[in-house]
Amino acid sequence: MIEVKNITKKYGNFTAVDNISFEVKDGEIVGLLGPNGAGKSTTMNMITGFIEATEGNIVVNGYDISKKPGKAKKQIGYMPEGVPSYQELTAKEFVKYMAELKMVDRKTRKEEIENVIKQTGLEEVQNKLIKNLSRGYKQRVSMAGALVGNPDVLILDEPTVGLDPKQILEIRNLIKELGKKHTVILSSHILSEVSQICERVVIINKGKIVAIDTPENLETKTQNKNVIYVTVEDKNEKMLSIKNKVKDIQELEYIKDNEDGTKQYKIVSDEKIDLRKTLFDILPKEDITIFELKKAEVSLEDAFMKLIDDRQENTNRQQENIDEKQEKNKKKDVEFKSVSNTTKQGKNFSEANSEKTELENNQKETDKEKGGKE
Image 1 (cartoon, rainbow, N blue to C red):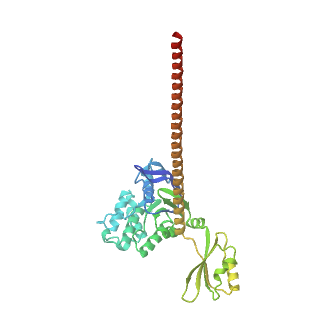
Image 2 (tube, one colour):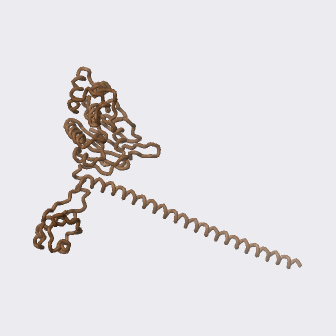
Image 3 (spheres, helix red, strand yellow):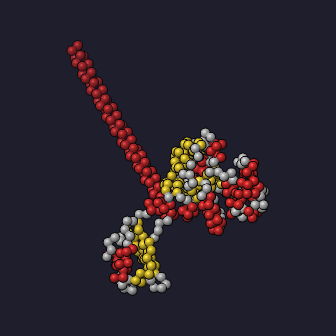
């Protein structure tokens, strides 16, 4: 449905998006995830044709956005960040205006507008001025504007930003419903939102793609430790010595005392080793009663932070290598110049000695000739 091929966007010397590529299949809900300023909105603006890519190609439903912009844009419904709309229009008037801009067939336009208003839950406020609506309803109006004309692709830039928890839940449910009939790309820096809505995630940081995968796979791939939290009653205080009896325990850390007299501990092992069964077997034998034992799950937040940190660490390491090479080259350059100067000085000294010797020999010959004449 959507192919993004080696896209780069530069503003002077600043590279906002740096040679990224990804695909979105028909009927998928894909999230563009990244911190503020990562390049998400720039990428969306290039997909919609709002801004032109410096390099690369974008194909929407078979149409190259740079070669056939009219046909490509007809496939897209775009909801920009910030709920841009005409405040003096009613919700229905705005949707009607968007239908006219998109050249929806006159014969079906009225029915299309009514369907979109119903679909986005605007029936009760359709005749109210947009400026008098809550932010949640304004988001719905903006989404209705994107949806009118029944485009194959919906692109939603930060669709829940600034909403309260109830409004966020409503918009999320609406996006899930829209995903049943449309291909959806949405951007967000809210990790839980992407995890709950999207089938795949494209993580962008500093204009580059860090990872592309399902939220579940990202969580699994970035997990390198197995963490268990266990709450126990340990009258004889044997818990900390358990590490000596279970060789696969890498870390055993006391967390806190609870009001009921129990204590919580954190136990860490290798990602491939699950110690829960072992603990259930050994702890009762040590007269330690288990009140609760749960495995800590890696969240998308954890995966996101690890990927970003790893990327930054690699970037720093690469920069250090570059700096180190440059420093070595500087030293070699200084050494080369030093040797060159020494060689040059030696050569000059040798030439001077040669000239002195030649003058002395010439003087001897001159003196000899004078003696002969006398």
